Length: 134
Image 1 (cartoon, rainbow, N blue to C red):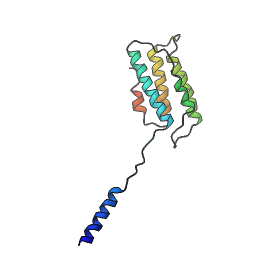
Image 2: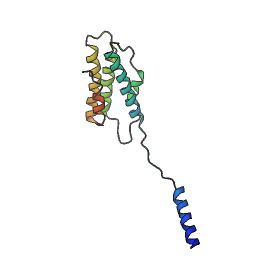
Image 3: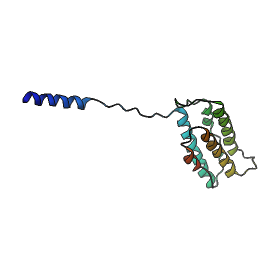
Image 4: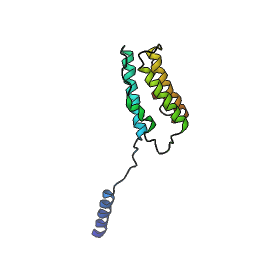
């Protein structure tokens, strides 16, 4: 009987010492960049609502052309086209000579994000829509 008890103890010890390895999600470089863009535009939105005029285009946004995409995504002509339109719309936010109201320029940039995400990766659209100034 004592041998049986020892075997159970060994078995329990073995099961406890085994490690479970989880496959944790690691966001791509592009996902991280888009989260930075979201955070920046959230701040710009608040500045606009507070009556402040944004003054400097974030050069990190240029990484949209080079940031590594998720494994299941490919950079294609549609993505590149939307990337260029997005960068132009973002630059326009900081165009002090524009005759278009600041809120409209900001919403135009946000709408470019939404339009692009309608062609690919639709998940973030509800979050992006929260950036719109109403």
